[in-house]
Amino acid sequence: MKIIHCPLNGPRPLLEFVSAGEVRNAPDPDACSDAEWTAYLFNRASVPGVKREWWCHTPSGYWFIAERDTASDEILATYDAAELPARAGA
Amino acid sequence: MPHRLLKFAFRSTVPRMFREPERLKDGYDVVIIGGGGHGLSAAYYLARDHGIRDIAVLEKGYLGGGNTARNTTIIRSNYLTPEGVKFYDASLALWAGLSEEFDFNLFYSQRGHFTLAHSDADLRTARWRAEVNKHFGVRSEVVDAAFVKKRVPQIDLACGGHSPIVGALYHEPGAIARHDAVAWGYARGADSNGVEIHQNTEVLGLDVRDGAVAGVRTSRGHISTKRVLCAVAGSTPRILKLIDLDSPLVIHPLQAMVSEPLKPWLDPIIVSSSLHAYVSQSARGELVMGASLDPQELHSTRSTLDFAEGLAAHMLDLFPFLSEVKVNRQWAGMADMTPDFAPIMGLTPCEGFFLDAGWGTWGFKATPISGKTMAQTVATGTPHPLITSFSLERFARLELTGEKGAASVGH
Image (tube, rainbow over all chains, first blue to last red; front, top):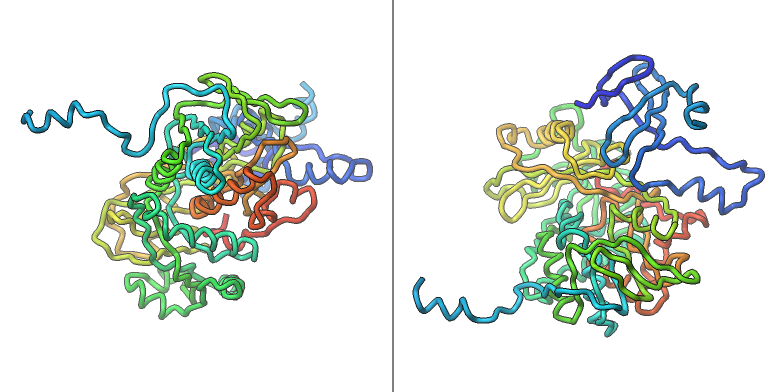
């Protein structure tokens, strides 16, 4: 079974995790157009590549970030969501 | 070698299924990306019904090597929305005549299709589907557990005691077919109407001028064309990226497996959404089994042991006597999922670029009708009336076609 390195709980089996998809920034609902809002609601960047995703270790209810290659299913890094601004800016 | 066989060795042979042209022409009326069931079916109906014969079907790998031959071959029309029921029922009407049409045995076999209910909530959805179906003349009815047992005596109605079957949605027209033969049959039909089929031909780029398609760049040279139909299922996001078109598609692997061949014992198709399992017995006796999608996005056709374990456990809930039966093969396809479980078909903001995508886990049964409706859409430039609810712009208008309740298993 595939093992995921949880930043809080260490290496744990895949079955203990769920993914909530790519980290995305919502547009300002008061400022954006209807088209921008529905594009945010529905459209996804689904070309294969390395993505930042929200993952949750369900037994502990801990949400964190995983960088995963959606072509090879390889997880390149996992870290606490607090590190997201620094990592995403880099 | 006996001399009387020599004359056959030197005789020029006609291709058994379809020709394989050595080179691409400089241009075509229509270029179809994707040599699976949907692309070949569209090519066939374009040539046969609309007289457009100057068509190239481009296939990156080999013909029917994608989801056409990776599905579990179930054909049914017991959907939930009026749009879905009408669309898939039109497909069923075409299915029945295909073997005759292509002079090729597709092993189309009507079996009857059970969607098992394990709870009051399941029964409620079954009732809803049955009523919508009957309204449109589709044979579906809610049946009790005793009816299920009568048709499938081997089933354990208690499912090991933890998930008892309380009834089912029964859909008599439910059928299976030999899926690779569907791609070959449509290829033969298209080829005999003048369509060119090019395998091992990958699309590398699309030329767009003034918002309209002008050509296709391939691994075997450039093609000029004003009309392109994209029918590539799990590879759709990669093609859309070539023209910077966004879509709600997300790719998930859908796995399946077959058992060793058994003597015929299972006539109908059995689906349990609560147990995340479906099974039918093929013409050669293998149990063809499937389950729900892999939970994460992934652009790969790898298989996992987790899947085989989970599915086997649920199969034994339904049929405990299978415990000694071996699994022969397992595989996966890349399902292009949409938020509302309905396909994306029709025109796009790029003029001349037509889309046949979002076929997720429900594409095989739609092969004939998707080809027929997309052929008319490409030929006339106007969406076929059966597919107007499946347009790409339905998402921007917040007019979704909610078909999730009719998905074979909970995803």
